[in-house]
Amino acid sequence: MECPKCQGLMMLERFSDFFLIFHAWKCINCGSILDRTISTNRRKSLAASAMQPVTTR
Image (cartoon, rainbow, N blue to C red; front, side, top):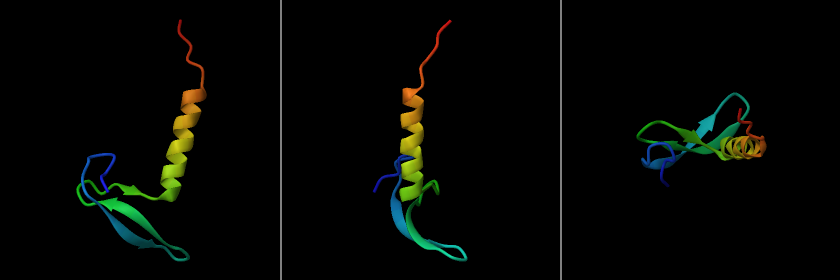
C-alpha cells in the first residue's frame, strides 16, 4: 500500500491501548497512520466541505 501523504511504503501494524487492540496502516517513511476510523472521518469532512456554499464578494 502507498502512503497518501508521502507515497512511501505502508505496513500493517498492531496498536493497543488499555481496552482496545486494533490494526492500522503505518507509513515507514513519514509515520502517518491510517485506519478505518480515520478514513471515515476524512471522507465525512471532505463531503461536508464540498457541500458548503462558497460566497464571493
